Image (cartoon, rainbow, N blue to C red; front, side, top):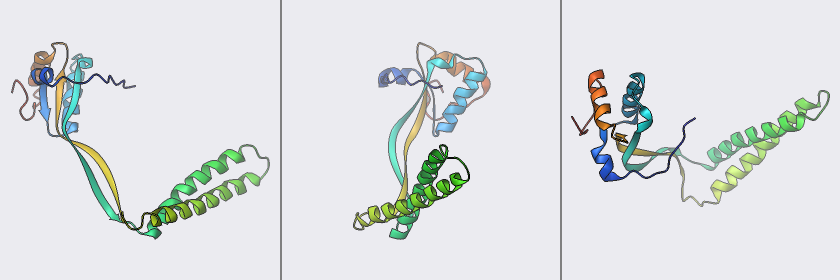
Length: 168
């Protein structure tokens, strides 16, 4: 289980303790993974994303019909779950009817709420999208004086230390 320490990163200390900088999180993760494989004490490392941007990717036009369909799908799952819960306390073949009834009623109400919810916006947001928080750079930072040791271990392993990393 990963534990998160909310202690803020001091930018001046981070600049002196930057082991490597990468364009993608996957590259930074691979460097830390390699250090872990080489028995480096990775509990002294952090991966810090810098220059954060919120990227919203528009996935399509949202109509009342699509909103109703999405509502029906989520309502069906909720109804199925409720039907399963209620059916746990029944005897005989009635359990199947409870499950199917819950699914259908959930889909119906989900469609109604999806349709009404979208119609209530008055066309102010007629598109669907996904959002992601993206950093322009990911720094591997060492705490407790382990920066040079980590840089040396990455050099020995032949792992590139990315763009603008200290010690490169």
